[in-house]
Image 1 (tube, helix red, strand yellow):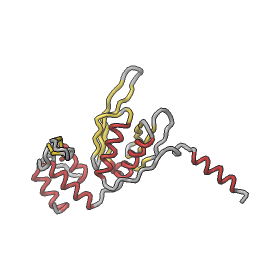
Image 2: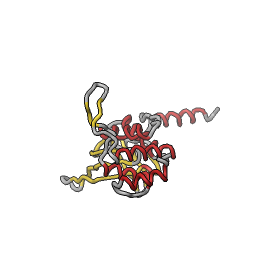
Image 3: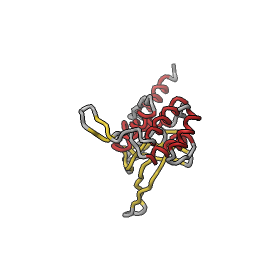
Image 4: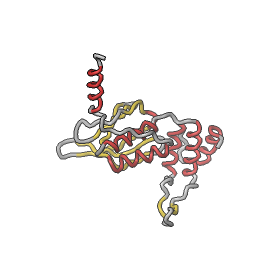
Length: 204
């Protein structure tokens, strides 16, 4: 029992540590939901990024970097989720909450205005870094091929009866790029070549 005060002290220290005020989010059930959560967190709660676009396989964005006291540059960045090795818990070393991602090629740091938003992005990235299952790969291949061949309409009608842009629509080049990321093959926008390959590989 003589160690009980020390144990209480250690637990108290943990309670006020750097992660004490950082909530944990449950991992999204699907890759599509995880991608949506990551888009929302980066688009509306991050600092220094713009043109954010995340799908089930990768993230692209523009990052604002300071060169000198008065000079800034916008860099186009890309992260394939399969290349992620680890996602650290958010921490706040200064003004912004930081989320560090260890990936092939180095470390990335995203900055957020608050802990909940940083934790939302953390959970999304932890889900997206998981290996794509065979079932997920087949469903994604079907979705991307439908976009490639123009089977996904540009406009849809929402629940209020208003015609809006379909968030699932992409141009053929983007659909072909997604298929390449998924399969490791590159047939450009050749629909017949993709159809033949997907039939053999996924039975589509």
